[in-house]
Each structure stands twice: as C-alpha cells, then as structure tokens.
Image 1 (cartoon, rainbow, N blue to C red):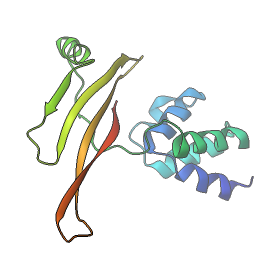
Image 2: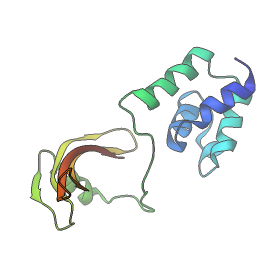
Image 3: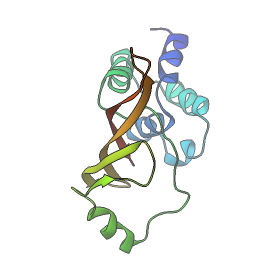
Length: 149
C-alpha cells in the first residue's frame, strides 16, 4: 500500500484513535497532544510504525466494529477524585423518562476505568416522527448506543 493510500485510510479514523495508536506505537505523547489529525497521521507514517495489515484492521474496527467513530464534545478539565466515585456509581442506572423531548429509556450499561480515562457505555431510545400511509402523524422509537470516554 503506498503512502497516499495509507494516508486516505488513516483519515477515516477519529482523532483520538490516531492519538492512541501513535502513543501505543512509541511516539511521545507531547509530539501528538493537541496536534491536528493530519499532523498525527504524518508522524505515524514518517515513523513507519504501522503495517498495511494493521491499518486495514484499524479501519475495519472503526467502520464495522464496536468502536467510537466520532466525538461530540470533550471536557476541558479533569475529574476530581470525588467525581470518579459518582461516575462509577452510575453503572446499571436507568432513567425511564428524560426531560428532553423525543428521548427516553437511558440506561448506563457499564463504567470501566482505564489507565488515563473512564469509559461509560449507555443506551437510550430516540423518537422519530413521520407521516404514515394514512396521512396521520406517527412515530417509532429506535434504540441508540453511545460511549463516553
């Protein structure tokens, strides 16, 4: 696989995945922290640390696998020690009704602590409105899965 193809494939990965790959493969964290996606990809390619097979595997994991492919937001500050206790206690918490219209049945599936982050897996239902074949307003609820890091 030539460099331009590798670059295109790596562009499909989210920023944090590229950051984690770079650090895992031995690039110093200060070289990738706060850098643009293109800069991180250039670093990864210049170090020659990923084989074609690894690139394909990462792309497949993020496109077809059970990995997060985008980030809605990030927090600018770290949690305090007391905050972690609160977050960890959320596992298996269910909220049948939410104050946000069109959403319901939020359930925290798991809370796991990793070396430098906490992962929260959750599911919720979102309502989709449509007009049925009889011209009447109708809706359907669809379950969504999410992950906070």
